[in-house]
Length: 215
Image (cartoon, rainbow, N blue to C red; front, side, top):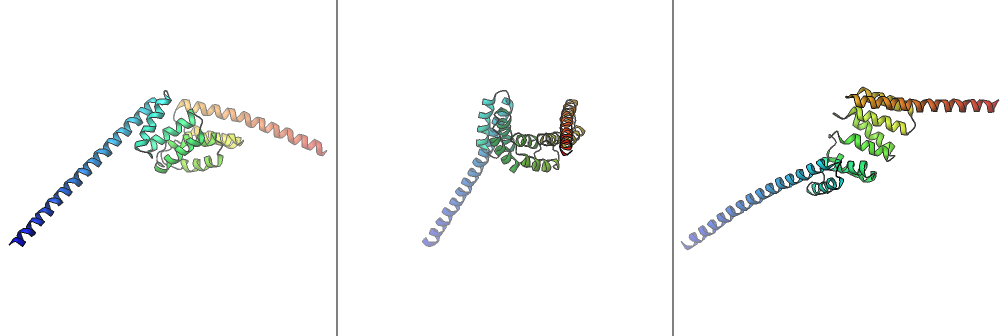
């Protein structure tokens, strides 16, 4: 009789422990969920602060982004904006490249990143890398084709390939969706045509000098 009572007590104790464990697990899950929601909320607050501050208050934008990235170190939008600040405001292209590269790991389908990343590569004279990224980005869905062909033109221009640059600018014009952008592209085409004309006249002059020397 005592043995049966003892076994019953042990079973009751085990059942109570199980209930307590289940209750604790539920509390832990709830706390984890609440913490995740809180972290997400805090991240969004700091990201919106950064977006609101940029580009008028760089100090506040950078501070807010650092806080945002402390909650989500791999967030595409935060890394993109940090890269923009380093590239466009501070001229620290290598640091900007690191931000954009990390952002692309988790955001290859986020179209906004490609034009500014490619521009940074061109300005940093990473021409081969810029061309590879351009070839990839142009084939992606929803990317800004006008901006991408514009940077294709810029890339060809800085490499002295003026005919290719003009063709790329014409493609950019074809994909232009507002008058201001189209006017700018027309100006770029006219400017590069002048460069091409000078290059042709120089080459013609060189050929004449060579023919004189031979005779």
